[in-house]
Length: 128
Length: 300
Image (cartoon, rainbow over the protein chains, first blue to last red):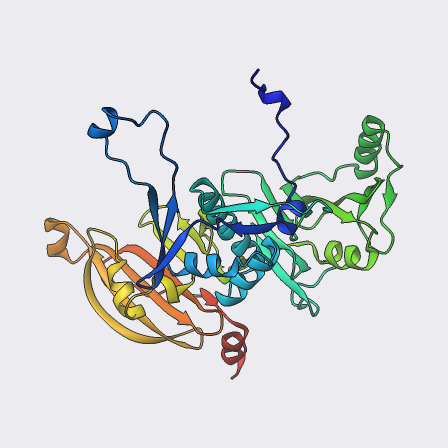
C-alpha cells in the first residue's frame, strides 16, 4: 500500500534548523575545472522502461552535466561535509563582502538548485 | 522637537532613513522588507534567525489616544495592561511574555510631524531593555527640508525635496531606488548599489557604464570625475526626435558610477530631465559609499 502524503514525515525545517544543518555533496558526482568555475557530472539511474526497442530511439546519457560559475564553485568548495549552512553563508559573505542576509539569500537559493539537481543534500542536525 | 537628527548612532548600530522616518538598529539586524511608494509605510528588520523589529508609520492629523488603543488591544488579546515603556519617553505599549520570548508592541505619536509610529520588537530569551531604549529612542520622523535623507541597504543619499520615491527593489546584491519629480519637464533620479563586481564586471567601470545607457539615448561625452572620494566615470547622453533635435531640446541624461574598493560594490546614479542642454545632478543631491569617503568629503 502506498503511503499517503499525510503519512510522510515533514521535510520542512525552521530557519534555525536549516542554519545548523550540514550540506553534504553527493559522493558519486565528478567535478572538473571549467574556466573560472566547475563542471559537475551527476550520475543518473537508467529508467526501467528504457529498454529496446525504446532505447534504440531515445538516447540516454548516464550522467547530467551542470556548469557552475565562480561563486557557485566557491560555495561547493565550502561544503566540505563539516561546515554548517551558517558557516558556509558566513564564509561566502566574507569572501564577497556581502551582508549575512545577502549571502544567506544567495546561498539558500543556490543550495535549492543543487539539491534539485542531485548534487547535494542538506542533513539536519537532530539536536536542533 | 525633543529628538536630534544630528546625533550619530552609537558604536555597533546603523542608521536607517526610509520614507520620512529615521531609526537606529544593531548592525546585525538587517532590513528584510522596506515598503514601496504605493504601500503603507513599513520596515521589517531581521537578525540571522528571527524578525526583530517591525515599524509601521502613518500621518495622523489628530493625536490618537494611545492608551485607549492599547487597552482595546489588550482586551482583544487578554494581555498585560498597557504600560509606559520604562525609560523610553513618549512611548506606550504592551509587553507580552511568551515561553521563550518577549514581544513588545509600542506606539508613539509625534505631534510636530503628525506621525503615528507603531513598533513591534521581538526579544528571543531575555528582553534587552537597554537596546529597546536605544532603538525606540532613535525613532523620529524626518522634518521637511530642502533635502530628504534616504539610508538603507548600504545606500546613503540626500535627495532634494520634490522627488518622490517611484520604485525600490532589493534583489540579492543589487539595491535600486528610483525617484521622480512630477510635473512639467519631469525629472528622474536613480541610485543603485551592486555587489560582487569581481564576478560580473568585465573591463572598467567606464566601459560598463557606457553600455548601461538606455536604448534610444545617444552618448554625448564621457569623462572621469571624483565620486564620493573615489575615481568615477560620468556619461552624458541625450534622447530626442528629429524635430526636437533641431531645437536642441530632448531628454538629457547623466550617468555616474564608481567602484568603491572598501565596500567592493559598484555605485551608480543617473539623473535625467527634459532640457535644452546637458544636465548636472540636482542641487543638494549627495550620495556616499564607504565611511572613508564620507569622512574625506566632510573635510574642508
